[in-house]
Image (tube, one colour):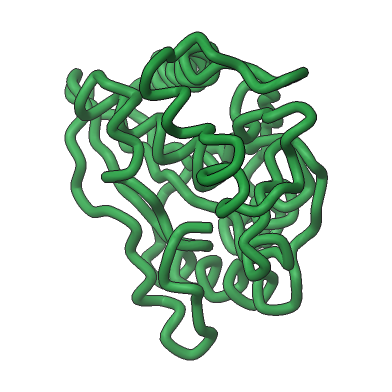
Length: 211
């Protein structure tokens, strides 16, 4: 049986605009982020996608997005899954991407050693495996159904690189825009149908890049 999975990145937050890493920090959607989620919800309703259940990261920005989408899907049930949360950087959360890249050399250190973890945070390997295990369990539980997963930029990118390339280090190839829609079909191997579609946001606006 073919199982259809829709991956959705939450709407925009102030930290996205500022270029700051949120990670496990529980920040809400900003005004534009809410409008983006509503635009995506309208698209799901217009296309009459038969989504049976929505899985969401428990972080506020993902939950807010999921709740807006559920209203457009005849109040589809929302199941919170802590394993869908964003990459936890411990003491380095709240830093800018520039600081993480240049001063902390986070991505360089992770490329050299996938078991490297920032102080109080998790490693890239642990992050990738919790995401992969979570989504594999979700797909197995809902075989033959249409499912939505609402999560985060880094998490969705890492998950896709694991599913498509079996290599979490290729996450840069799968960076999604806020409130974008990505579709995969499992039959049984995952097949990417479309990626980071934001055609529904033409009247709302989007950063146009991952932050």
